[in-house]
Length: 464
Image 1 (cartoon, rainbow, N blue to C red):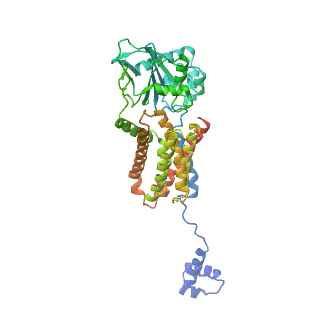
Image 2 (image 1 turned 30 degrees about the horizontal axis):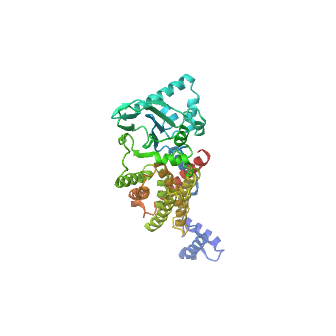
């Protein structure tokens, strides 16, 4: 006898076969039933695996969490570049000296990091009473006296400290109350033979320019025009090549030094001009500065290079992209440094962050090196080269060693990029040939980088 399950199956199958087979035939030969099942599955089209291999309902929450994480963790693009403490030491006729340091005074007065939001700092100072504000400014002067050391013949000199941009149009234009300039003045001791400067580790690395106008017939108005700080330029001074004041200032800069945090400057001889730096010294210094601009200071450039790494598990696509990027940024770095090409930082910086988002989101869409990808990376490399040139303009180039400094800085940038790729390979290389590498590592990381790039673009365009 047939069991209940067999009978039920027989009846059901009999309906499907429209009565063409008896129950006994189906019990002895189940092939018609299998044929029906096979036919049913063949009618369902195959959709293929999704590129990120996630359930459809999980994608929106995952993207939302990545966006929130990126906006909370990644710092906002600052309104003014304070990666260096630009410092100008001016030796004046009559034995006076003047030292101007570019620092975010609002942040320093409130004990906040230099990259704190400007409007937040200014709002805090605005809410203070007059007595509280005066006390805060007095405390700020004491901070400079403690953290900045001016030495003549190794003897500490206490200067007069003022903040010339306080409550001026120049300060308000940068969303600050106290401005960005701390000025230290005084009279050079009569018997002094040398001068040195040192700032504590609380300040970013110092970029010092010594300007000696002793023995030069420079009028007060021209001197003020030469030394006027321009918040809209990368170096801080008038960068118009046709400007007579800019020309004269370049001729009067007798020494440039770049100091790491807490370092003391070389001794500046007050009786004779300092010798120019050696070529080996220039190579070592600018090689280090180029590397440092990528690691650890250039988070935007690091994310761009990391996006190139995340595209594919093969080395050939990575080599093609890195070669295109290197050739492009070397080209525009050289042209911009020699004044052939120029583009406003207010346009370059948002385009750089937009390039990060573009490359990262393209990684999410495809994991293959498309024919247009190297060309796109080359175009973005041109923008990054202009960004590198802006940094090099801040640092300045030593007279007579322009090409040496330029090539050394570019070599440092290349070493920094290779270090980023090497670090990424050491961290992720062991997983690159796993089936889940793209859905679980490449796509989520690229999506995060893309969100960060968009966030930076918006802040640099709408909240500069």
